[in-house]
Length: 88
Image (tube, rainbow, N blue to C red; front, top):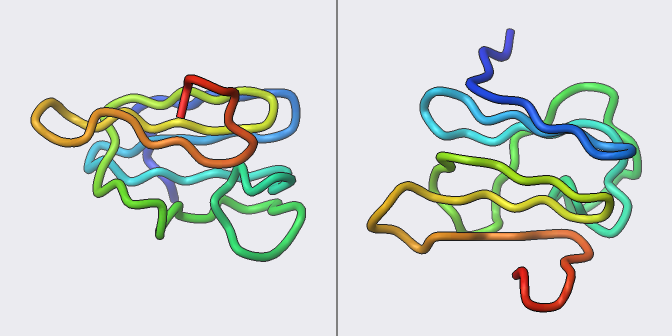
């Protein structure tokens, strides 16, 4: 059971951040927007790892990307997927 602090949804994928800052996503992995190395569609939430961030305070999702904003004092924003210029 995933206990989410917040959930964000785009056209074909969604992501949640937990109280301890973990990010979990599900839906389409097209363009790597779920940060998974393989697979196209995930019907169950998968934990986002390997993107460089350690924990998220806030999430933002777009049609082809996902961004995590870290707590103050750490690198502020990490994005993955097909990130628009100037955002990542």
